[in-house]
Length: 100
Image: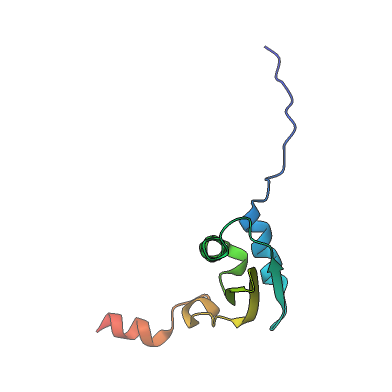
């Protein structure tokens, strides 16, 4: 039996993934303006939920608004990282409380 060689195809980026990467690359105060495909308010809601699932922009503070019939995504900072994840270890004070 002969093995067939298959070409490994790179993972295709979803529309949310590519948009999330664009938002993550924005500097503070910069915006992306999108033309809605349907109802602007419904599209803005879909974009908000879609971006929440993208790892690249989870810590990005952003606003998704409808302005004059267009969708405007503005980056206005970063969410602070929890201290437990910053150092990679559990703080000593927490460990002491658990032992008591």
